[in-house]
Image (cartoon, rainbow, N blue to C red; front, side, top):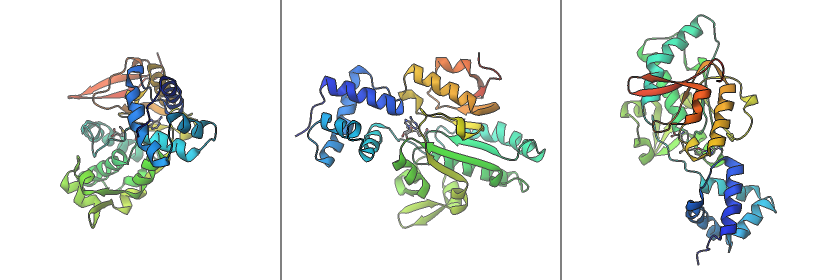
Length: 285
Ligand SMILES: C[S@@+](CC[C@H](N)C(=O)[O-])C[C@H]1O[C@@H](n2cnc3c(N)ncnc32)[C@H](O)[C@@H]1O
């Protein structure tokens, strides 16, 4: 029998989920919690949502807490999603980064995929940089001059991303066959990112609600299709922390359908052909 989510259970989970990962589930969308957590109830032999709540709060069951977050978060992603960030990277930023590296102005260029899901965004970036260097006959600068960090709140997706292994369906989503054949090794029905590309992407679990103080400074941040689920206050809080963790002139990519009012105090929107990126302001307004 399916458990029903009562109003008071909805309020408890709503607050828990927002406190834990920033995701704001509005009043009218209680069904999201009910449908996404029902499977977990059944699999764990629990009879009510209250029982599940007590396990994660009163018994501090970390494993169950992670399973709740995994069930609530949306991990949809694909290779070179929206295409435009990588076009802009190639047209505008990679030539600039090569100059900065050659002149000694910078030893490393740091990029961060901040809600990386199963890794497609970060690996797409490594493949884009490597292919661009190759296409332009650049040999003195290599992928080793770029540090790519990829994080997500979910340890489950981070573990999957780190393996670099994708099934035949996910490998088809957005991936040019030329890139696939250059950077993947086929192992039965699975396609695995080659070790050289894998070794240039560092995955770790990280919650965007935490402090960014220890992350260091980034030149490029991809924070795409995650803030859509956050309340306005939490979005602003993330923009403020991203501002603090980016180099002057640093670049932020959002998803192509994402538009946020509060971003303007920290980043300036820049148009490149039909696409946009956000450039860190010298000072917040
Ligand atoms: C829809 S996916 C987007 C993946 C990728 N950025 C893209 O655009 O294809 C959103 C990801 O954000 C992660 N996420 C949700 N809340 C988060 C938080 N507070 N901190 C870090 N990651 C979070 C989810 O686990 C999920 O993998």
